[in-house]
Length: 55
Image 1: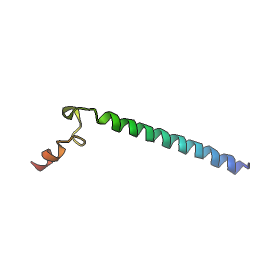
Image 2: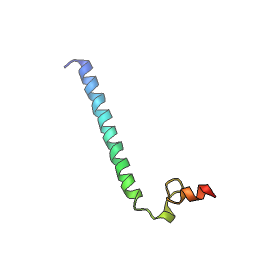
Image 3: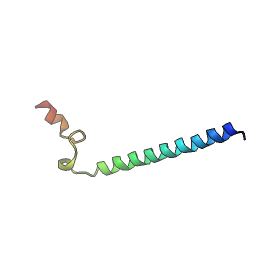
Image 4: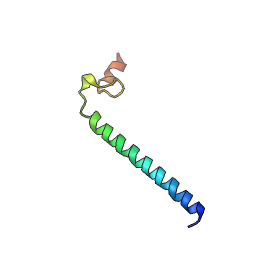
């Protein structure tokens, strides 16, 4: 393997590792966000946000 091969392999490991970590964090955040009660949810993600915007 040439130096370019090592370089591509190294960057590939970094991108795949960071992408996998970001995917796992987002997946965990969605799962936890579903358990938050409506009164504790942020206005952007609460189910009542549509009613608030209509008034």
